Image (tube, rainbow, N blue to C red; front, side):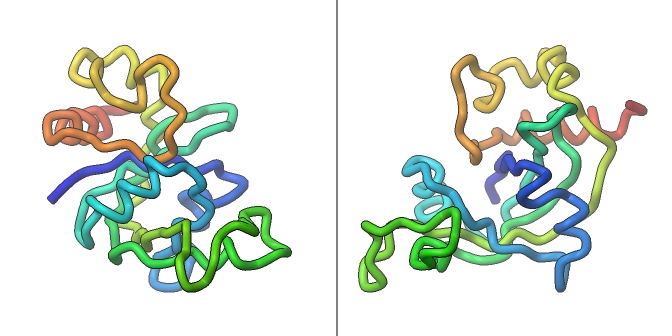
Amino acid sequence: MRHWLMKSEPSECSIDDLAAAPSQTVAWVGVRNYQARNFMRDEMQAGDGVLFYHSSCPQPGIVGLAEVASTAYPDATQFDPKSHYFDPKSAADAPRWLHVDVKLVRKTRLLALAEMRAAPALAEMATLRRGNRLSITPVTADEWRAALALLKKPG
């Protein structure tokens, strides 16, 4: 089993949106970065752990735990001209963009970005590296355990 940190802007899909979704599962649509797409396509498996992270908001940070609920499959938004994620260069017979489904495990307290940066056990976490803008990053087993331990502490 692998672990991932997946960022979502709350205005796109918040932890509350995930909790309210049918079967508490959403398709992780709209990824338009090849490296993040490749993580979904080549490495993610159903059952992998996910740190659900709110980004581009007043208080960014981890807000819940989820799991990958499917293998990668074509993101239909790439074919919809009305979608913000439309890609006119993507063809139905050779889709450029894929996504996975993500299922809620549980909401957590906010583990704020500042608290993450202050934790020595998370110092090498990919999402905390200067210049990192990926919406999906791998999380090591040690980082996963450290994040879970931090989430158990009062905020």
